[in-house]
Length: 312
Image (cartoon, rainbow, N blue to C red):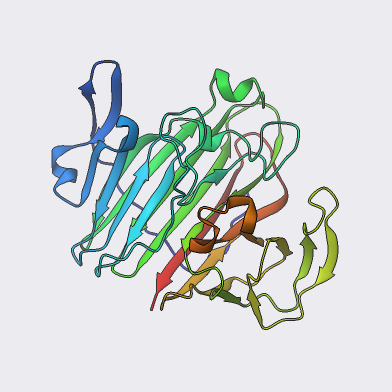
């Protein structure tokens, strides 16, 4: 297995003991130990009685992660301002993915042979371990194949998703391991929704990228090259940027500049649905780290990609 060079490092953590907690009849989900819950990691009931992990740092920053979909739905710095966005039409009933935050696209980005963006955002993840790092909480979630995933993609795999909350940043590490006896291929993305004023938001760092622009025809993207230093969201935007820079900067139009750094997410996607979502398009933009081309893994091989969001 090849070693991947990291532009920033996430710590190696010792697992904490987990226990099962029954909160309501018919509901059972993983919770961290009592020791760990005192270190800023708790499991509680969220919207629709779905279990969610709450991370709270010693500095007062906070994040929420729903186990359904392994979806980070909130990231607040110490001033209480949420830098992520969950759409008002989001449902928390497991009948569809949670619309907002940082949903997973795996093992397929976009449309293809299976349902849109794959199945990882439609499945229950579990808490594998948690840790405290100098007042900064860390949790690792796990997803494995099951009948639901195998009906679409007949492979055995393990996905680990580590989330680290700091004073002014949130970092994630996604590791996909082939636990099957045959090779497989996949694509992936983190479909991140940022709170924003769409008309005032802009992204720097994409100049020179090859583009696949899905406006006006999503089924036949136009190839091009980004010539702008600052990319804005003047209307409908759905554009893939191939071989994007390892760091982008989002001005959310609300007074915040967010650094979006990554390792091994080779591409980026900008999206805003404009009038297709009249009720909320003005209040968010999506800046997504992605791996558009296939990742090929032989049995026992792994692939890891990291994202680091920070606000000044």
